[in-house]
Length: 183
Image (cartoon, rainbow, N blue to C red; front, side):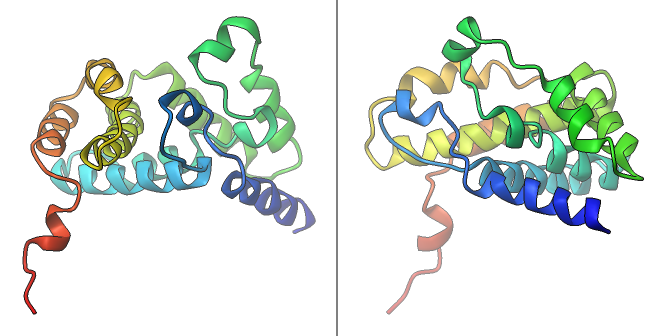
């Protein structure tokens, strides 16, 4: 259980590590854990839309897709031009004493290969999480997201992902809150 406690503390640190790209946007802020939660919830909704996917595998893949960043930090595309991130090494060290370590590694490998239906959906959910953030920031008046939204929207590949992206773009971020407003 000691190894599991260490894993939980390690994954918990993701609540404190801020995703680095927001500094370049000029607005917004999100921890890796917040991003992973949103990605996992998007995967849950995708599995309810497409019942032919393995919901548990899809959601679990989303939960673990960024855990290496507890050791490597979050590198944006500019930082990756100048520094090499050894995610495989980080994962091997993270899982080496865990009885279920290979489960984590296999999910990470599947996510990164992006060949299975679940991996394709999880990768789209990863982008949709970012699209939700960019859309919210854009809707509240910031100027950076209008440059990034078209770039990130092009990354979405699955039919469900594209449908969700379109709906997100057609919906104001606070519409849900104001839809049944009365005093």
